[in-house]
Amino acid sequence: MCVLLPAITAIVLVTSLTASFAQDYPNKPIRLVVPYPPGSGTDIVGRLLAQQLKENLGQTVYVDNRPGAGATIGTASVAKAEPDGYTILMADLGPLAIAPHFYRQLPYDPVKELAPIGQVAVLPFLLAVHPSVPAHNVSELIALAKAKPGKLDYASVGNGTAVHLATELFKQLAGIDIVHVPYKGSAPALTDLVAGRISMMFVNVLSAGGFLASGQLRALAIGTAERSPAIPKIPTVAESTLPEFRAGVWFGLLAPAGTPRPIIEKLSAAAGQVLRMPEFKAKLAEQGAEASSSNPEEFSAYIQAEIAKWADVIKTSGVPKE
Image (tube, helix red, strand yellow):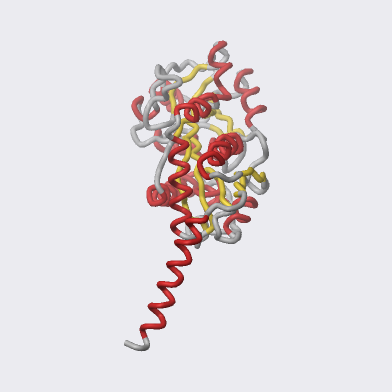
């Protein structure tokens, strides 16, 4: 009994200090690392959130862009940072769910070295084709691809990117043979798609909007589980013909592993308040994104499910590692 008392006293002391620290948190500016350059989708969502978190937390939340190596440099910097709640991460499925299977040597473990705070938003992928492609829905596109194996091609914004793997998932579920043409970014890929040099592409709603309105591209379906409020007339791939298909870019907040639980909960609650604000939802909608709130446990389970999902897609498609 006497041996246990010092250990119990130490645990009580640590718990008390942690709770006290969390009550005072935050008492200085918070750095929100975005592992992409300014102007990227993750950066835009991160800056919108940072502005509102400042109001909810009573402290400045400033964005620190740390791009490079497929977003793994900035993500690693947070994984190795002091777990005090003053360095947090806005990341997406790329460095969290795809990178573990795409890079031979990843400088962090997304499950063991990062603590999920909560999901923030989803940017749906839209399946678009050039008007010359004789398909007006997903079923017709699949039938066309099966009738002409290897004749249709699709654009991506690079090997191992979310757009690339979304189409590989589509290929696998549909059982079709279409040819991958990787580009260095969305602008050149869209240029060739609009020009008719490429047959199809999964593209985010915002990027494709103008081309759809002008008739330069035809939208067949959206990749989310439910129809988008922004474009409710466009069906989902799932309801069209492939019920298991889900594809889009999701964004979320994380902290270094070991960050005190009360701080994680405080950040999660603050982010949840922001995500319920109609004006914040409206700002996301202007970017083609949708608010998607979750608590730390839900987000953790979601990340692990996504890691498993994209592992299977990468393995089956034979995408080479870097």
